[in-house]
Image (cartoon, rainbow, N blue to C red; front, top):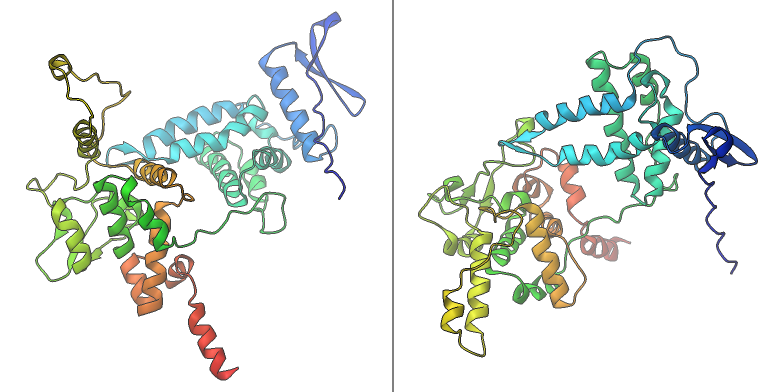
Length: 399
C-alpha cells in the first residue's frame, strides 16, 4: 500500500529587513503583510495560510470586494460587544451556563484569522476559511456546524443592534452546513446504551453517592443534570409512585415542565438519602469526600500519632466543594471509576439511552416518550435502540 502523502509544509512568516516588513511566500509569490511582528501582520499571515490550506485562489482570501460603507467597526470589536451581552444573557438560576464558554471556543478562529478585518469586508468565503480551520482542529461534523451557527448568530445580533450591515449577515446565511458523508470533517460516533456488565464493574470504584445516581438514572432515564440536583423539596412521596419535579432542567427556558416518576425500585435506592432539610441536596460531594478520608483512616496499618491527630487539615483546593455534584464532576467520577476498573470508559448520558431502549422495548414509544420527558416521539427514537429481536422474530414467521 502506498504511503500517505506528507502534510504540506506551511509557508514561513519571514522578515524583509530592508523595509522592516513581514512577508510570506506562497506558491512563488511574496505577500507583504505590514510591519514585522505586528498583530496586523500576524493576522494577515494566518489568513493567507488558512486560505491556502482551504484551496482558495490567491488574492481571494474571503473578502467580499468593494462594499458600500455601512460600518467601520472591526470584527474584534463586534466580538467584544457580543461576549459582554452573552455573559449577561446566558444565566440560569443566578449562575452562568456553559454557552458563553462554547461561544468563545467558536469565535477563537474567527478572532485569530479576521479579528482586525472590517465587518463589511467579511463574507461567505471568509466564513468557509474559518470553518476549514475548525475542521483542521479535528472536530466532528456536528460540532463544526454548531460553531459556525454560533458565529452567524453573532452577526445576526450585530444586525439587530445596528453594528453590522444587514447584507453581511444575509451573505453568511448562504453558507450551507456540512452534510454527512460529503465533507472532510469526521463523523461522531452515535451514543449507544451501556451494557449492564460495564455499569456493575464501576460499583466498587465509585462513592456510594455516585452509585446511587447511576442506579437512579438506569431505572428512571433521568438526565445527568437532573439527578445531581435532587432535593426533598422537589419530591412528592404521597402516592405509591413518587414524582420528582426538578427545580432546574434542560428545557425549562422553552416553558416545558418536567416530571420524573420513581417506582418501587427507585424509591428503595433513594430512601436512604432522604434528608430532614427539605432544601438540602440528596447527593453531596462533601459527604463523599469525608467518607473517603474516613475509610482511608480506618484502613491505616499504623495508628495516628497524637501530633497527627492534632494537625489541622490544609485546604488545598482552588475553590470549595459545592453543595451538590455538577454534571461534569459526576461524569468525571464515572470516568475515574471506569479507569480504576480497567474497562472502556462510558458516559452518564449512555444510562439514559439504556433506560430509553428498555422502556421502548417493553412498553412502546409513547410510554417511553412520557417517562423521558420528550415533546415528540421522534426524539425518543433517537435515544432508543430499535428492537431487532422483534424484527427477527417477525421475519422468521413471514419471510
